[in-house]
Length: 578
Image (tube, rainbow, N blue to C red; front, side, top):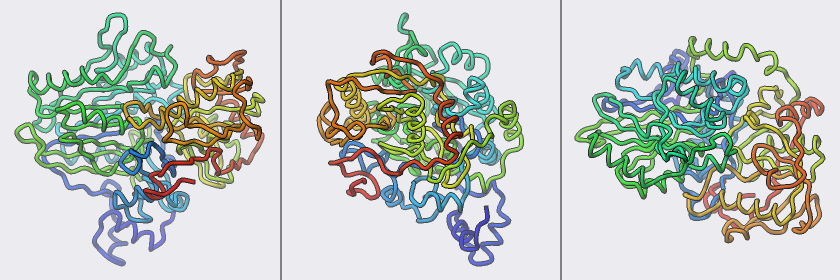
């Protein structure tokens, strides 16, 4: 990547350099990678935080959503902000690296300017710099989960590669969600025999004995402060993922027991601060903080929100650190009299083009990739358009996946789940086998073809819509709307449950609720609700072969869903999404 003189000056401004002209260029040229994002330390406690890494150990491109729709009572606030509205809310400068990391605005242009994001070897450099500055006894590193799943190297090693990287990075405490899709036995094996961090969760119970599966909390001495950390793993895991992976375990938010644990830590254990390490989702955690009293800091995860500033619900500070290894959250605290008297927070972009990778971490990652390099680095095609994952109803990468499945199964309608993890490929760039796994690497990858009555299909879609658009965040389970190929509809987000979808067409013909349609789907249990189900190959194999045949993909940019009633958080609050 080559930056022009103007780009260097802009970057100097972004990095807070005060010199001008040639002096700024000279200072920037001499700047050590570890100093790129300056931070004013506060107090004696530093809490580092990551969430939703999704096993992305190497740098990548990841475009944030250009539409982020929900109920109108929620849009325009943290958790439901994107695009221009996001820039305005957080006061982010146009053309800055912050805009590039946090929004879809001018993404391709800024990608060419700033390069790839993330990479754990680059993150390790930042972490080591912070520890060197503060001292290890003053630093606690927290991980809100969705860390072990999302790439080929994670899938091929049954998460061992990622656990090794977590250990080297220095993660101290974590919770989980997609971790559980490796199955109970593998999860416990990794926790008991390999993971150095503590895995905590107060909300996961053994259904037979009604006992907690994991420690509910841990207490850490950090910079002279006694900190109690309670864990909340994803409360809707049995709904979001196949139940067989966690058969015999029950989940839930469990506010009552959470309140009991907060009180126990405050009164019996006499900690200075109570922290909730959560994978509930940003909006659910905001709602939870209104009901559970005494939480000092809530580290959220699951919904992938990059929030450069903490938000406060009463006396509870809530932070969330984006996704895909693009960020490290740093929270410095001064703690006196069991209260936070000063703080400073920064959501640090892991700008891999400006940070030297840590040599030891880079070697560890390369060693884990080495057995699979030939397979994963194979170029199978290219794209003419931007391939991205995130948006409320539609994404170009999901369209490619759906077209591949349709060609394989000859289904009338193709379902692709609205997972929020994935990757982005710039226009005119090559597509590798690794890229396909970055969109599909799950432990239940098989595609199914089956029949389903129209009325049942609509009911399922209405249920999914209620999950995404319910006005009560406690009933939102995360994820975007399932993507559909072969089916078009209008949606009224503010309509009552069961009445949001209308004017439905299947391949250009009016939808018939009494007819049985031939569907294909992957990544869930939908086929179990149909009839005459037939299993096909894993989705990644189908998509790899499809891209090889096509050589060049150019999915349309237009969604097949029309939103008819909602004011969204982008491109500006009060604007109508296309």
